[in-house]
Image (cartoon, rainbow over all chains, first blue to last red; front, top):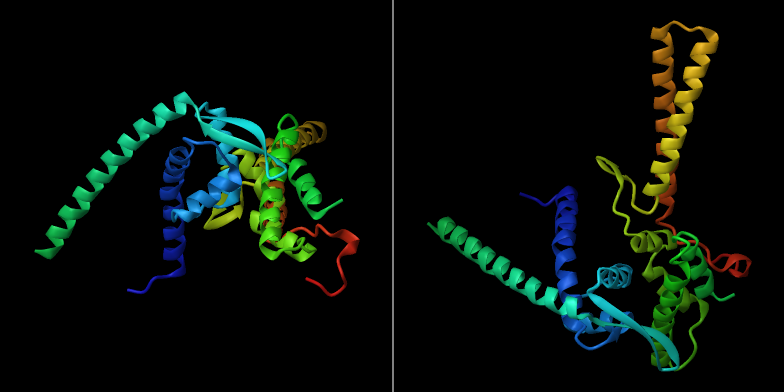
Length: 121
Length: 161
């Protein structure tokens, strides 16, 4: 069965949805030390997660308004930049999100594993 | 005014007034840092094409502002006709337009003493027409978001795209 343009669109949208939640987790996990938006984007990309600027920068502000991050303007390389880092609330939420992620991962692996066995029969 | 300043102005116009300066300052720092790094790699200041390349990759000002406003609403029928960048304005103008149309139709029916059946049909026709027209206009505007705005104004050399 060939993959149609509609299938590709569906896949693109589902992938975006799947990534949306994991991007928050990735961002929080990198902000134990303070980083500015551009530095964070590079740090994520270096570890294999490319996030568009247009997604990442507004997300940082949103996480700050939710109390998960704190920010501070600092000069670096002759330019004033806003540095974000985890707040105490953000650190505790990150730990709980990681537990949730672990539970989802375990459950999904179990399901996919079972389905694989059934198919093999 | 530099290309970056024009770009930031275009984004800021579409942001809530109380957040405009703060977001503008942060975006200026982020895009400026990216331009500095690129210039450092090249060992020379960026020309306008290179600056515009970075701004283009960052996105159309209307889409950038929509992300900061956290807009998710859209109008889709088979495919997306009006995206999150224009949807809030579309919804506001549509609501205003339909209310005015309804009011004018009711007043006209009362003044002209139209029979209820034909007044109702005429009102539905006018409401449908307004909805269709506005949706087409906003769909066309939405399609134009695929084209990046000309930030260079009159200084753009002739023949360049």
